[in-house]
Image 1: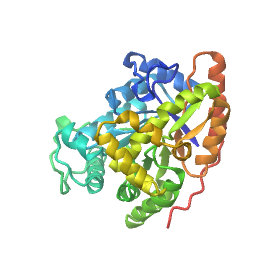
Image 2: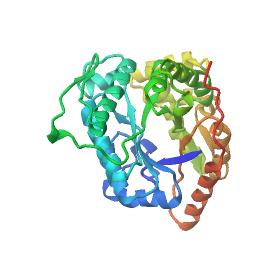
Image 3: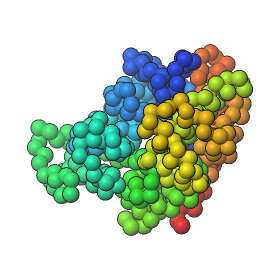
Image 4: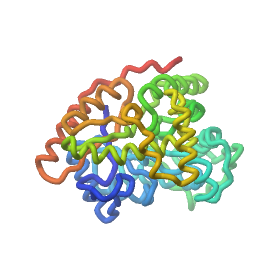
Length: 361
């Protein structure tokens, strides 16, 4: 199993939730070098509070071995040609280590944060990926740009704006997915699928992978060529007291995910549709503090991997070892002993054999 991590990596502020931890952009190069030295296979960055492509450029210039993935960057607010050029530049800078991870975002954000008209995300994403690849083919192979789709018609590429071929043009594209249709799209056109943290192992195995295989079959592709990369929801700490504090944040996160209609299928799959209804109602009323107590320990452990540092590696291996190709994982490091502990956990997870998955229904 490949093990990746997100920045920031290190001691965190106990007064902040994990989603509020700041990324010090001035330290990205240093932190990326530390991540590589620790033995991680890859570094990922989300599009939340910083431009993920800027972060990837800083990390690419400071590293030489590990892969660098946007996990994920928003597709639709950027034109396919803009995304194609950014990825092309990062592939050159990283010498082929860049992975373009794309996500669709939910309706409210598309309309109210990005100011775009909303369209069904699955067909839109399929066409978006095809358009990006058409631009790449134009640059690498000298083909005329002539892409005709429902949303995008691309047929102009003058020499001034053509960067030309590069040494590592096979840039993998990963797609964030939760629901069935997007899993099929990933099977048709992507090199990897990145299930949302709320996707349980059972949901991935029984829902996502069979849908991925359907999409791959339609495109005449082998579903095994599509990597499965998970960012698991983890609660871990050095001891039980610290773990209890971590569980407060993770319980709130599960409650938030349950309130989000886009993730409802992951709760209905486990017979928790009523819980999702209740959480959605509380969130609409902005009664945020009332939500976490509704997440029982049983539900919490269904969606999160919970354990101390001494336990978490084995628990992650048992949960995902036969299911995914790559996982995001880390624990804070502050001194040499903690570095050695993390390095040992990484070696244990990296030594897992490749997964054996039944991808067809």
